[in-house]
Image 1: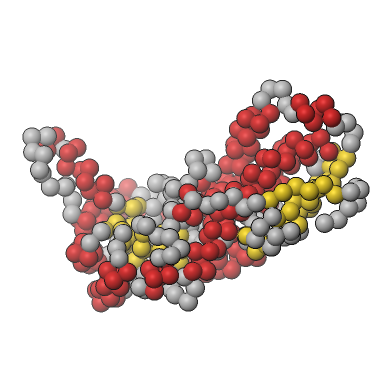
Image 2 (image 1 turned 90 degrees about the vertical axis):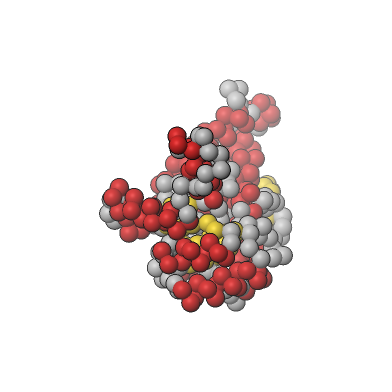
Length: 343
């Protein structure tokens, strides 16, 4: 299997679920685009760690001809993500380093478990150690937190989604990690879907030349009118087949706004910062008026609240914390004795 076709078993189950959805955001897989992002990050990471001089400590202490073996070991329970990136890191620093994974991305692991073995030039292994653990730890931390949220909504119809609240430059990698944890990807970027938010509507009137003399002028569009406007724009300016695939989502923060937009049929309505009681009423009204519209709950979602939110009957729950609040999974590199040592 080519690296660009890498689809771990755990992720394959999620992909099969996505195929059953009528309309879904693009889901991140390990492909050439993700590899390109990873290479850019590697260039920056190598520059900030090695500078122009390189690793003085290793150069001074470790003979160039020395070989070594080490195990990547989990210090606490979690979910692994980023193994293809680890292989790329080793190849980038020294192609002689041999990467032998013991698990696959999406796998739950326990403390003390060896997830991979590395063998090759000892100096290169020491130089690459921190970058390797940083990358795996960050992505596995996102996957681990995501799995906790996914487990919290089991038994409901709700699917857990990430957001664009990601580390700059790491977005596709972090969204890939969300998939490893069993979550779903919301749009990767502004180019991938339409999401009409309150600020889009609030910004309209002041930007109009005729509005300069009237600070109290209403927004240019109501939420329903904005959806119609976007649909018209897509019909004229967006080429096929993207026209059929492009999701149109609208944010509302009141049940009255939901009533107004359901008849015009956005693909998804984002229910912002609504209470569980309001979410239940929103689901009932959606079912009565336009069952084809999916409802997404967002705002202030945490592990304590997500179960009750999911029980309201919403289809989607977006959680910024999956990426902006994940703690790195604690991993370590333990040296193994002898060139043939196994972990």
